[in-house]
Length: 212
Image (spheres, rainbow, N blue to C red):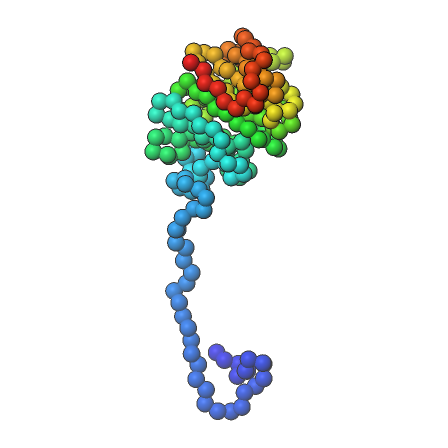
């Protein structure tokens, strides 16, 4: 129905008028792509296989074991910073940061079953934790804290973690850990986290290591 008003709200003079009506079949959604996400699908799903990894920092670490890979960036905001994928690139699981705030470095190592994750918090902690490579389930260290609880985060140092954390490497049940600022490498028992050896007076600005 027309109220006989023009565009300015004034009554139009008597006469013959025609009206044109435009119609359409409504608005519809069509999925084209997910921006900045190679996930399948590109969004989070209840089974943990959707989306990909962190949305806040660039990729920094990878480890391979059997038919699975782990990929990590130092931190994620909406996305999860650590994921497990199969050889087709399909995400299997994802985990959020184990700290709140700045995380600037991450390194990974695996024996094909357990995944070791080294993380630093800028001027804060440097610590190492573990999870199951197949499922992403947290895997506590085989040691207890002073309250008798399982240790999840093995503390390497309390402060200046970003200056220390570089790379971890695994071999025959031992975990090599670079402490760049102190110019040393710690050799840990990969199950208990206890320090079994220290290599001191190492080169300055160490960036990576391999353990064979």
